[in-house]
Image 1 (cartoon, rainbow, N blue to C red):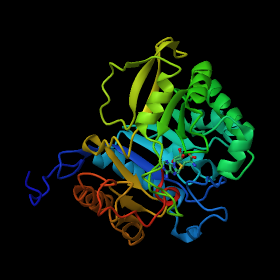
Image 2 (spheres, rainbow, N blue to C red):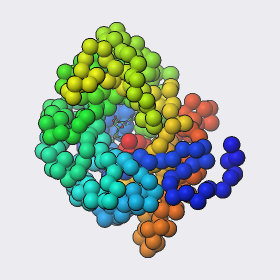
Image 3 (cartoon, helix red, strand yellow):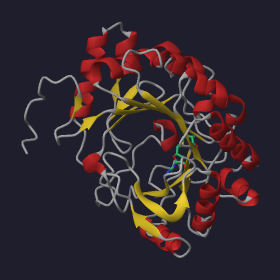
Length: 345
Ligand code: SAM
């Protein structure tokens, strides 16, 4: 593969390794109403000044460019906590009017979803991923430093009732904290018709507390699940999806199809070769990868008055430089300066 070859004249978000990004993760804020111990310190972080955060109209413009000029077909809103962004419904409503309307989803901690699920569906949101690491009230309070488990459970129910389906749950297991809960979380998800995804903890915390030696691995999670359930290979091709999925024998999803469980082995089973994601931070920086050390500043260009096509071209150039892999297991690996909450998880 010639890595110095010039970028072909193709409108899509190609890179030098033959991948094309079609899945856009948009962070709508770096702020959050939880303080998960593996994500940020108790006191929070120095938040972006309001003037640095893209306005609703700027977000809508960049998403439109991504969809209309760059071939993006999926848009996931995230943060920080996207439900605390006042303009969320407006942004979804506007993106839903695009000619090549993308599928839209939201990654949220679920707080406030009970109140907003129906309005989000009506605005054009297709589905949600809700983060939930424990079913135990005390653990939840310890892990997130807030006593909000009932709000999250109510948010999950409301999302399912509204039809923001499939409702997926994201879980991070931490050794000695909640690593005994994998089977209970799966039983809960099966009972309610939610699709559970375990995510390996990644070196993206603001406190730099991640430790490769003690993180809970995909193999361990699968071993624990197999102690309580029979997992069968999923015949559906994975494509660019981060999760490896298994069918849970003897259990049906609410739509009558087979129930599934997924594991996102970002560290021990990286899937960079099939990555189809591009990221936009709340302050308008394009990142080719969660672990990128470079960013491309679309906000400055946008506020400087450049055209849609010029913005699109800057985005293409940023993605052309995407690296082959995140290199977490490489001795030269450097944790990105921005933590997960400021990139958009
Ligand atoms: N506030 C929203 C939420 O809770 O889903 C969206 C942002 S949050 C950063 C997105 C996801 O990233 C959550 O599922 C969270 O558990 C996960 N996450 C945060 N830090 C992580 C880390 N160091 N490794 C793996 N996942 C992480």
